[in-house]
Length: 181
Image (cartoon, rainbow, N blue to C red; front, side, top):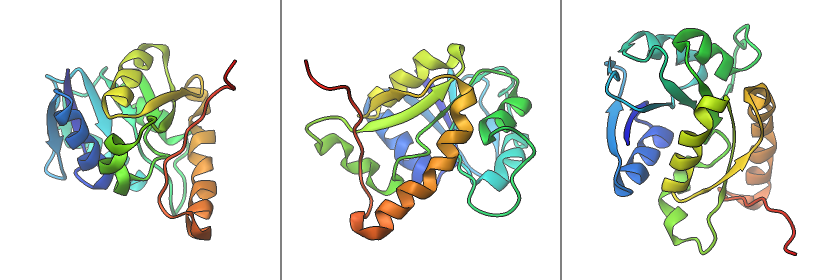
């Protein structure tokens, strides 16, 4: 699969390395922008305040499946139901929200886990399969939170994860599953 990653920081760079290691053709795009027209899917991993600017420097993204890994940290929120809806308003294609609730500084440790950690995601129907595949290919287990209408709830969950981390948990993986029969 051809994956274009917009954002070369901890999130984008870490996931690009995992996907490259699993055999994907990965293109990384930074502030200079670039062309993603050859991509099957695009990951957006930039600060929330940079969403519009980052996407304005990229050509070929219109109509593409975009996985939004952004979170809102400070300042005024854009006037959209979620950051994923903002992304969709710019790209016009199917969008998923994923990887925004995972600690990027431990992506390199996922392969050592006996049981794959979870990635909570939500997605438009047309983005669901590719999102689940890329979650698995990064070494994680997909945890479906429904349609894109769940994106804001996912964004609003981040402070809870940070509170756990700051209360002594540090960076951590999570797993969600049903009881065994």
